[in-house]
Length: 70
Image (cartoon, rainbow, N blue to C red):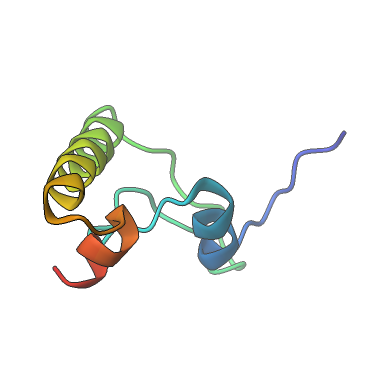
């Protein structure tokens, strides 16, 4: 299977359930190929996800709803 070269951010978020109020990955505007993530960006994304999951669970809401209200 051929890898997709251009992926729209909204479709990536839906597939990965990766909504984040803080972008940690450059996405393409379909004009230029985006730069790869730095070594720090995946760590920040993981930290945001873990913190949001823990706090959302304490409040009894979904992670996505918790982040939408942030």
